[in-house]
Length: 97
Image (tube, rainbow, N blue to C red; front, side, top):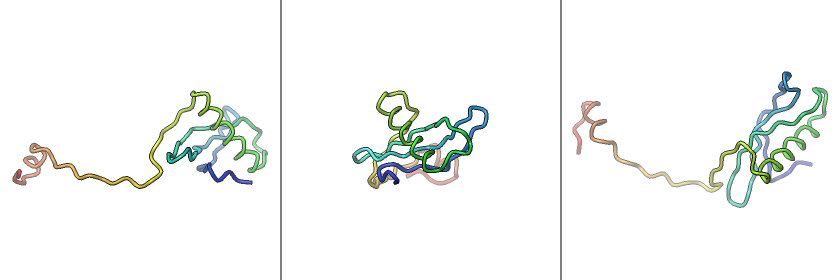
C-alpha cells in the first residue's frame, strides 16, 4: 500500500554504502517537504519494502530534526515582476525608464 502523503523520486542503489537512496516528498499540512533518504538493504530487496523503508527513514529524520530537506508551499505561488536595475538596462543598450 502506498502512502498518499509521500512521493518517492527515482530510487537508486549506492553499492558503496549498500543502501537505496531517493528524494522523498512529504505532504505536511499545506507544505511540501523534500527529504533526502537512504535505506540500508540488500540489492535484491523488493520495491515495496524499499519504498516503505525510505518513507519511514524520511519521516523519522524529519521528526528528529536531522534530515537534509527543503520546503515549499503546496499551493501555487503568485510571481511578482521586479524591475531590472538601471545598470542592467544600460548594459543591454536599452534606455532606462
